[in-house]
Image (cartoon, rainbow, N blue to C red):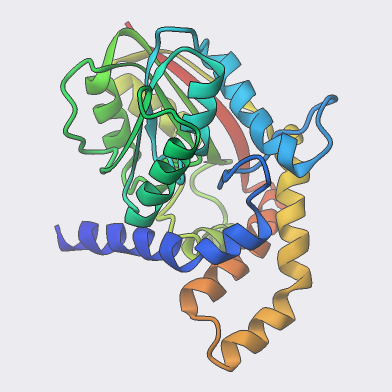
Length: 285
């Protein structure tokens, strides 16, 4: 459908146009992670918090040596490489964005992980992998981009082996519907990040179970990601006037500007309890 192609292209354009922003303001010396960080008693720096979310996701999903993992929406491959460095696993990372595949492959070669990691340009809702190819599907802040979340679950179920697991760290709306002002504020954020919508935990559970998944668990981990979310809001707010000036003189386009605006509104929406950051795990029996 044309609308699907348009949405797909909007996601690619978003990551193409904002890659400099991520490189300057977000990537750490240790990781090219696009996702937020997880702060606990042992983590106090941005760099370590980004890596720590990988540790938490791996722990919650029971990553073990021998797993065959699909990193669905892998970005520049940071989580895929982390998994291969810390476990004896095979990892396949997929993303819609061509430049992310190239960056991920470059980092893979730099770390000499060609024998255990691969990357390709694919849609996680419609992949070319055979049925029951993976023991674990890993989705870190990527399912949010699925236009219809049930499509993500359908493909994940097809790709998982019996007993396989899915772990997802992502954004979840507090409820549907929100009040009119709440929906506007939520979409002021989502539209700027090329996210069509986010579902509630109830909606996610219903969609996962329709596809055959069991053992649905979701944990609200906002308290651990709040410092990271607040850090982005702080930077975006401080640079807002400068960003407006750059937009006015033609050095920032509508996508850059929307990303900047969304980075402010995401925290405002969080403070208004319109969404939360959650960690979801499910199984295929």
